[in-house]
Length: 343
Image 1 (cartoon, rainbow, N blue to C red):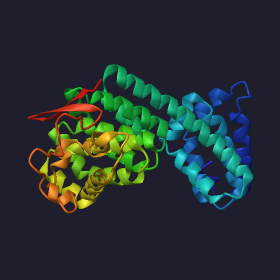
Image 2: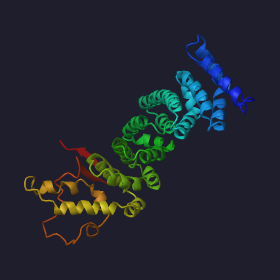
Image 3: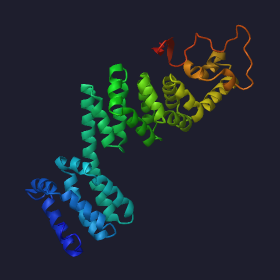
Image 4: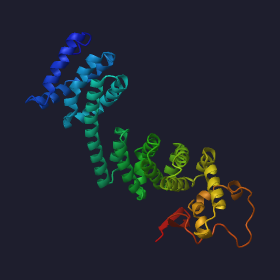
């Protein structure tokens, strides 16, 4: 097949014959598929797509052959590993007006993705059961565009961060980089943002992870997420908790000042000062500002955050300690806040 690559008409006949042999309707179809793939058949397809990318007729023949291969569970994951998904995506982008190519390429791509998702979820489940973060992170790396895979992986990693000994393993597998990339790749998905910054908050307990996350521009992403999801309280609250954890290090506090956290805190302080709700009472009015973690407030002086700041009168302290700063009461310890659920 490689010798016939430049002979278009003969190559068309070859791929038509390939499709008939690879079709599962033939009794030995699955055996032929495995033998064909092991004989560098995928490389031949990729070479043909590269060389004849402007020939719609030849592309139809090549892509049609990929459909039965992609539907074979023993081969579909190998197709993904050899990069066939990128080729299919490029073909789809370059032939948007060809209905046949769009149909067949989408069928092949869907089959490869379905098998890949199944395998990734199995790796995540195994990693969760055996407490092996490397398996989970590998699934995220191998399936960068699958939101459901990343969401399941973040759930598992977030739970693992409750165990301090696992944080080191996550870092050793570059988990801080992969998690930051996931947050960056899915900026419009609230669930990814919430779980991503929940995992960041868990990792940030470790000072090494805290430093590495700061260097990965996690703080800039957090500020962007807070501003993007202005009507999503869960995302905004999780962002504030993540930033609170990262604020352990002075370098991160400088990054917060540079990336716009002070603007967010100023707006919250201003809203807290201006809100008046006679039904809820004064304490209820102040809850928005009080959901900001204490350490995060103390990153900046009150004069920096409050317009027309004047010292409070004696006994009129706005930061009464009898109210929770979040859904959790906070005890400040030497190594940071410890949260206790409010019943």
